[in-house]
Image 1 (tube, rainbow, N blue to C red):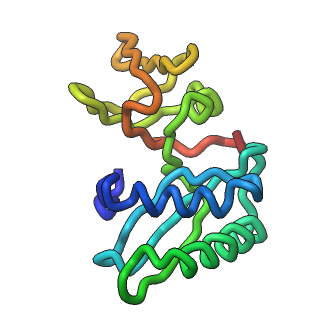
Image 2 (image 1 turned 90 degrees about the vertical axis):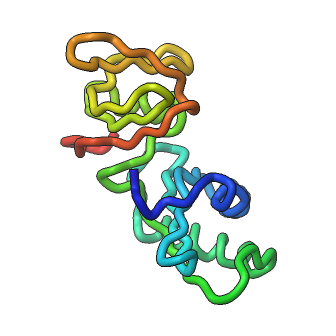
Amino acid sequence: MNNNASNNSQTGPLTQIAQAAVDALGYEVLEVQLQDGGRVVLVRIDRLDEQPVTMEDLTKASRAAEAEFDRLDPIKGEYRLEFESPGAKRPLNRARHFERMVGLKARVRAEGHAFTAPIKAVNGDQVTFDVSGEDVTLTAGSIQANLAEFPDRHR
């Protein structure tokens, strides 16, 4: 987890604004973080068609979101809106995110759990991890998880 990440009560409304702005363009907001004391709004996006995010994608998404952020003015004072691709520590929020990464290690935090382990299987919203030879099954959406190893190819 990123230590610069803000809690959901601060980023939730920003995530909704960003998602509304980029949804029609075929993008999904994976994560919004407030950094540098709230002066930087970092938005990580992915393509809904699961193709790699390009610089053109980031530019299109950024322009659409900038217009919406300017219209709604959700942050008082000056701030910088930045867009990134998911990157090596890709957030895993939904079951389909885990499905794409089966076999790779994820860093997971949930109530009563904190581990790094391979994603073994996904069945509906249930994600099973191989934690030291034991299956641990958790519900996607109720855990915080990031990819812990970079895939050898785009997934």
